Amino acid sequence: MTKAKIVTDGEGRFYGVQVLCPGCLWPDGRPSAHLLQTDWVAPGMERSTHARPDLWTFNGDLDRPTFAPSLLCKSHRWDGEKQVPYVCHTFIREGRIQFLDDCTHALAGQTVDLPEIAE
Image 1 (tube, rainbow, N blue to C red):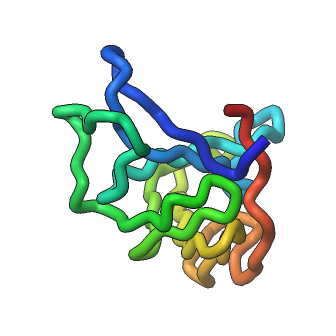
Image 2: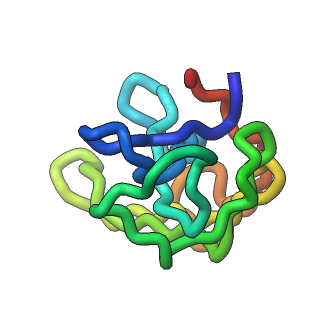
């Protein structure tokens, strides 16, 4: 198992790279996935016409992935009867994920290993 996996479109063309985020958890406790569209294309693959190569750089290492710039995810979550802002802001470097202080989840300010992801 690796810490990142290649994602393809419906026609088998390269679309991006997926990692699991241990800060963004589903209600059952599983880490949610973040999909990054990169300048890198998997060897021997054609880029999807729907992919944007200008969003992140990627070092091409699925075991110790590094992406730049940071990844910022904003949404809203239910807290009882109201919606509250949700932020996950990270740097992903050499297979580790650094959660910045503006994250609104429990891993804010921490750096941990990326979870392994099924290929």
